[in-house]
Structures are given as C-alpha cells and as structure tokens.
Length: 453
Image (cartoon, rainbow, N blue to C red; front, side, top):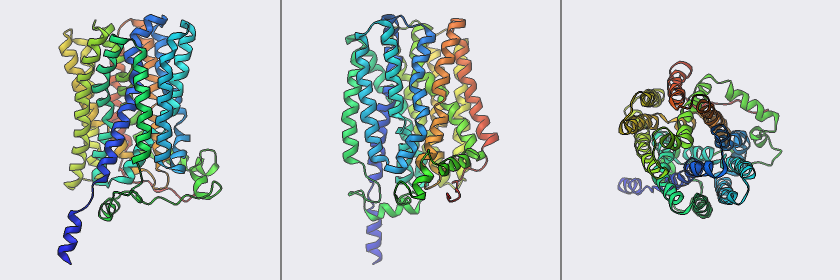
C-alpha cells in the first residue's frame, strides 16, 4: 500500500504548467496589441499630422476605456468564469485591432477620431484579461508557486516587446503600418479559438489527476469557489457592481490599508510600463536620432532584461517562502529592491552615448521586472468569493497610469521639447512604489470579507 501511495504521488500531472503557458502566450499578444501604436506612431504622425499632445491623448484612449471597464469585467469573470469571458475578450480586442488597419482610408481629422475610438474599444475588450489571469493563477497554483506563475504571465509584457517590437517595426518599414494591425488582429482571433478549446478549471479539466488537484488545493489554490446562483441570489448580488451589496464589498476592499498600498504600488509600476508601451520607441527616434527600424530592435534589449527580471523576481520570491520567510517579506524584498533599481533610468538624462542609454534602460527594466509582483500579491490576498472583482479593482487603479503617463509626457514634450522631465516623472514613480510597500502596506495576507446581506 505504501509503495502504491508513493507511486501515485510521483505520478502527479503538471497540467497547471500548460495553463500557465497559455495565459503567457495570450498576455504576450495582449501587450503587443497595446504597443502597436508606439511602433506605428511615427509613420502615422507623419501621415495624419498628429502633434505630441494629440498623440498623448490617442495613446491614453486605451486606458480610459480599460479603467472604466474593470469593475464590470470583474463581475463578468466571477459570474461566468474565465474560460468564456476571456475567449470573448481576446476575440473582440483582436477584431478592433484588425479594424485599425482601415483608418488610412480616411481623411486626417477623421482618421485621428477613428483611431481614438478604436483604441478605446480595444481597451474595453481587454479589460477582463489581467483579472482573468489572476483568477486562473489563484485557481491553478498553490501559494508557494504563485509568485513564479504570476511573474511568468506578467513578464509576457517584456516578451511581447522582444518578439513583436522588432517584428512590427519590420512590417512597418517593409510593408506599411497597416499590416501591423492586420497581422495582430488575425493572430488574436485564432488564439481566442484555441483558448476556448484548451481551458478548463482544475475541478473539471479532463487531463488533471487527483494528485495534482490535491497538491494545488492543499497548497492554498482556490479550486472550489462558491457555486453559481441565479442572478437574484445573494452571492451573485454581492459581486454585481450594480447592486448595493457589491458596493459594500468594494468599500470593504477600498477601506483596507494593505490593499490601498498595493493599489498605489501597481499604479506606480504601471507608469513605467506605459512609458515603455507608448513613448519609449518615440524617445529613441526623437531624442536619440534612431530610425524606426533601429528603435524597434534596440527597444527589445531592455525588454529582454525586463523579462529576465520578471521571471527571476517570481522565482526568488517563491524561494524565500520555501526557505521559511513570511509571505510579507517574500513579496516585499523583490518589490522594493527592484523598484530602487528602476530609478536608474533618470541617469539617461546625464549621458550622451546611446550604448549607455540602452544599458541604463536595460538595468531599469530589469529592476522593474523583479519588482512587478503585484498580481502575485492579489492572488495571495483576494477574497475567495470575489477574486475577479478584487483583481479588477487592483487593475483599475494600476491602469490609471495608462491615462496619466502618455498625457503628462505629451505635455512635457510640448512645453520643453525634451524627454528629460519625462524620465524624471517616470523614475520618481518607482520611488513612490517603495514608499507604498514600506509605509502603507503592512502584513500581506488574504482578506476575509463579511458575508453580504
């Protein structure tokens, strides 16, 4: 009997890694679609006569919609599950990405308006993506593996830049900016079909065995969430953003000091993210005199370092847990250390050699990757019956940075004609992340909400 038990234990399946690979690939496409305008932006500015302030607002269109759609997307995820909601999300955002290839057929003024509207639509469609990732990781991974899993899917933002930034730059250079949107749109639609086919929850996935289910659940994975009820039942009402019970839950989450510090930290981390997704390639072209093709390849170097830092941060955090460190210390050490390293980007204002600029940016994004553990913290702290809603609130706060960053930088460029102030603005937010985690966030632990009434 004991031999049989040991044999059974060693035969544990690893389906969770396949699920992680899938959300990594989807998140790579997610960030590549967000970054399309940063690559095609130089060509489109010339074609349509777009000034820096207008470009800042167009960059921000995605995030206005993305932020406003977070709470409804969280409710949809808790109500209908990540499989169906995520599939619809991928399909719709890819369709609107494809439509952006057609704005060149319009006049300049109409094209600018259409581009803003379509970027806004992509933001609405992408809103469930990261809350869905957080929900999937909370369900499929035990606490001791959650930091690594969250770091892997979060590092897809850098992998997207490594793979797709040079590819999109080449497409723009060789065939025109329209082909970038055609390629990304068609690829995303195909990916939505694949996700719908392969994704299941750990409770009913056909390839997982009981040993892996037990391992996930006994390690803190949220395999069993409260059963779905009718739309009028108390459980669904508590997660519906239109109901008073849901507003009460949101007030409880927003009134939690630990979560407020985490929300502030995610906003600050995303200031760095959105600088990279929007203005960084244009910085290389306008401030450093590179061609768009050169900028596409150079931008991949900090992205590689960010990817390496992202994976390393999660592995290091989980290793600290396995060595007996508290969850609080295991998450805070890489976050604080990584964000302090990110401040080095301000040094680009004081060097002239392009290779030094690339090195400083690579170091900064390596640090940002190490410190980008916010989604692991969400998976660690979200109430078990409101993981989608909790992740959506977190993501909503974080992506306010996508509104603020491109617009502020656009105005800085308009007033000063220089990126120096922009780099100080971005680097200062790395310091603010450190403040949030050291001063505001205390113990990191799962929040238990009172039963909705």
